[in-house]
Length: 400
Image 1 (cartoon, rainbow, N blue to C red):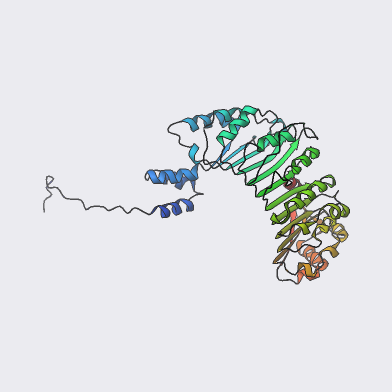
Image 2: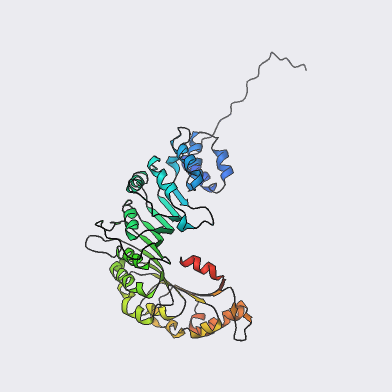
């Protein structure tokens, strides 16, 4: 049989199956961590281009040397990045001294940014915020109008009023995390009222190494008053010195039954008298879980009289003698703990645990010593007792 090049054959029709939109979204969600796959999917069609960009550009980490490129990309008609950014992170270069690394590179950029309608989370870390201008803050309120989560970590402010002005830009915040230091101890005089964050549900506060007086002012802003009634359901505070216990106690009493989850770090300066005088968790009748971090057992007094579902106690110790000094009777099984669904006791050692003979003890030996001190808990089915070996620098990173 000879092949005739002039004879035409009809190609069989290929029927393309269009997947339902919800299936396409599931596929993209499953590929959200695979950047190469998402880039490939973006060439399929217009619908997949949109879905892939939603994951590719969801989170943007902005450094000083990328600001100009980011501005051009946001304004480029071919960029189409701005509608997809949901999380924006700003930080100093790795290993830089954040107290000497000004946020001016970002503050100067903000007035030139377009509106970012999808942005719901802003993260600011390892920067000095002392040069922030009113023009920049006004631009932030315009660009980030839908922001619901703000995270401030290792950021230095001149005084507490700078934080107040920043928070006032975002009235729709639901989650707020502040880990700041202050150049001055006292609150600067100002007629600016505290931010009215009525939608706030989660509040995390990390007291810096400097400016504890200014931080006391900051905490007082969240105490409910007649004009401000936040519905905070989850509260985390670290690391509390003795001088800050009174204002924290006022905050806890003000939150009342709306508070459901509490995570609190006590430093060694806090005494049993401080806790008994200022903190009464029986006022928080809606409380369902409590996590207590401490360097000793004095702060366990906070557990008196409460009834909760989940209790976690984290102890930081440097030797077996430190374990002996703990007031284990405060953790004795009593009817008030009968309703617990889960109890977790973690003893975190600084790198290694030296024994009485000067030699380091292995983890199994230490586990046995812990269980011997809380025998009632060790017999409960809902009890988790663990040992963690943690370098001292990791501990300080957590409480900063």
